[in-house]
Image (cartoon, rainbow, N blue to C red; front, side, top):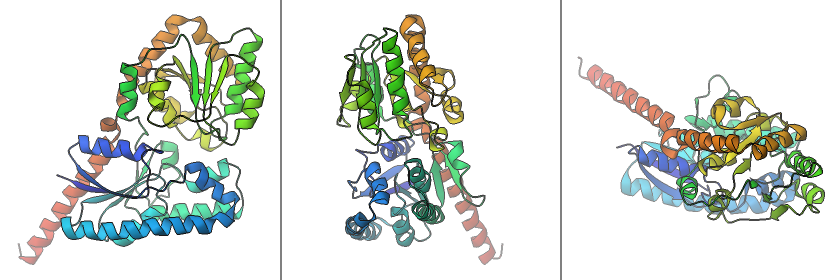
Length: 381
């Protein structure tokens, strides 16, 4: 049985990606243990550090405190259990992987590099030296790992030729599939949830809703979350009675809420990052049984095929027409919901972790052959 140690300051409650990978590896028969001291700072908070550098000292102190605990627990674990076959460093592990590289000499380190720090910072308005420093951090993290896990082919293409990487779609956790089974759908309700970052394209969503209202089309729309573009979106839509704003939903409650809606909205920006990703909300919404409308980008069309409705990135007019298509054609809406449900089975924890398991098996077989050859040479065979 392959023994894997999940390691780092990842926070499964806020960022479920690493939890999905852990679940999938366990379903494949791997023994996965965790050394995890979560960092409570969100993705948005980490990017905020770029705009307020004076907060870096406090952040560094928090990280160092967690690292002391991680180092202590790692040494104790190895003493009591021996060396693991591989170490998995969770999402947002740019710093953690440097510590893992120091602690686990000679052990394969898998880095879940879901985002490039420099790319994300640029997408959120940073520039110049800040982006250069974060790109250097990306490079240090990649160099410290044995295998980089990326979510799309576009992100994999950002690696250098000598880097080792595989594509592992984000997928959805079991809670989203369970929510679909227990859901009572609202009649043609529409939901969006996210951080209101430029990647999301929420101003495009807001304008599409306004265009529909001008035509007398007013389905119930729920917008969940807060972030950079929240004020602009709220000011555009606050007078529309069919629009409901929810600033925050606990992660445990989100699957059940989303599953109540017939239509879920993905991302619609034209930023470079927006053209490179398939957001987790798309996988989650499909698992919850929603018909998904999202931007027509290469990675999303490649992963989702005919199981989503695609619109031109950045176009409020195209988005409003796509929504209208589904609202005016119940059979099309129902068909797309069924397609999403069927397609979502390709993005369970078990399915998305197949490439990781294959890599681990190949690595193990290579090690066995290499050890055998060394033994033969020593014995003069």
